[in-house]
Amino acid sequence: MIRWMLVIFLALILISWFTPMLQKLGFGKMPGDFRFRLFGREWFIPLTTTIVLSLVASLISKLI
Image (cartoon, rainbow, N blue to C red; front, side):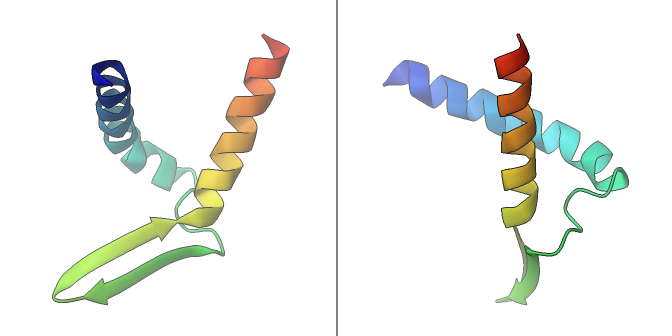
């Protein structure tokens, strides 16, 4: 359980570091990525970006 919590924590840190770079490449601005304001806070749900990045990671893992 501790191992999975550590993996999730590290993945979230890496995603937060790479988010600005990915936005410059166009990720996060795809159709299907939702950005809305609720309770004075901006929320971002990157559905399409998540699917595309998962497919890319899957292809890379199949090649290696």
